[in-house]
Image 1 (cartoon, rainbow, N blue to C red):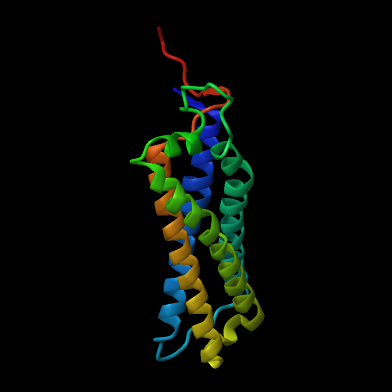
Image 2: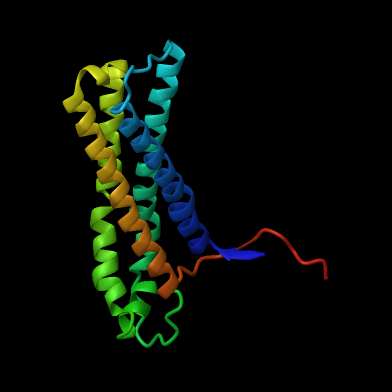
Length: 189
């Protein structure tokens, strides 16, 4: 089984960092929403507060890992310009999308949205992590702050869904290829 370095980095960016961030953001959002409907607010032990803080810190770290790996590893490969006279555009994703009128919108709309909206996710979830850390178990006493945290967690989730959708569609239309091949398993032949 082989995969190119560029494809592997794209998988790490989208599925590993982005996918886990999506799951963590959803779980955190549900915890915030649930806490607003509790009749008797639950109290955590000091260890529970550490776990909660670790959860939100992990969410922020995954969000930043997804965005920064996309911006500084995957995106430069995506926008690489093919040398003059190149006819095989399989390793030049942006040029491949722009060369076909049926896929040009995946770049002009999809990538433009993806590269701008994606940064909202880690910024918003970092704010939520700070609010949870700052107010610790007292979010129940500050309903406006809890609502703000819920709104920002929703923004993070929505931004991740938009960026993930466009990323998946872009990779389907012009898969990320190039770099050296990495072999995971060799055939028994």
